[in-house]
Length: 324
Image (tube, rainbow, N blue to C red; front, side):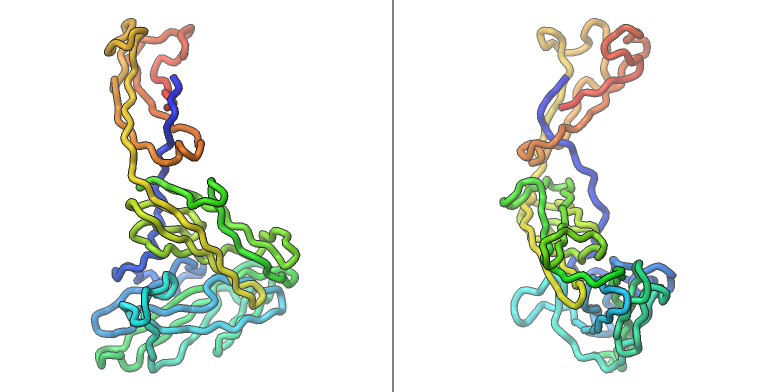
């Protein structure tokens, strides 16, 4: 039985780029203790004792060739609100002077090394995270000192890459895309070199949502709709010292309720010809995906034992699928 509606999307789990003041980023210091880089640690927790809210390591995602170098820098920020207008999604706060000296380390010195002054050098093809830490000495409010950390993944290429453009695209070319609240939209990121050819060896950009209360974005570019509204997704990367940022508008639509019922020839209520479906009807959530021409979702109805035989259509004695 065929209907036209949409597949309820699985909600992505990445809320690490949200700009709200939540103490969820104690992960930042934990990332310093593991061998692998933590490329999602872009914000850190805020203790009440200090204005030092989080640390930004720039660039935020980078690629260099073997033998190339890239100078990184760190900036401390308070928790806002921003005094010069709306806060940037990548730096949601005001720059803060911290009386401390940043330290740097690489999670894999066979791939990437970093000096005490923050000069990163590509050693071998692969990737490694550079972790920056900064201590507030003393606390900016006179309280105890606190330490913040941020991480950038460096991808090392065999030969230098001259960065051209970074582009984000979705399903509806040239128009703001849509995703239902509670559903996901996987954006396509295309990076080209200066000749216009697509390159795939420079790693992935850093993604941000300008309105994370409307939709969040994962570190792989998957947008999760939260509530009705619009947001802009940003993707930024630095390759060979050149930085490019792409943007993509996303509209989040409210869920649309749809009810599916199994009927007989005259669309009479169940049971039909002795076959009992459980449940006889169900309510599902459809999204704007129908407008975008996507495949429908699949609802499984269990069927009473022995109501189908091997020659029945469909020939399954347990269940069958209704696509709508």
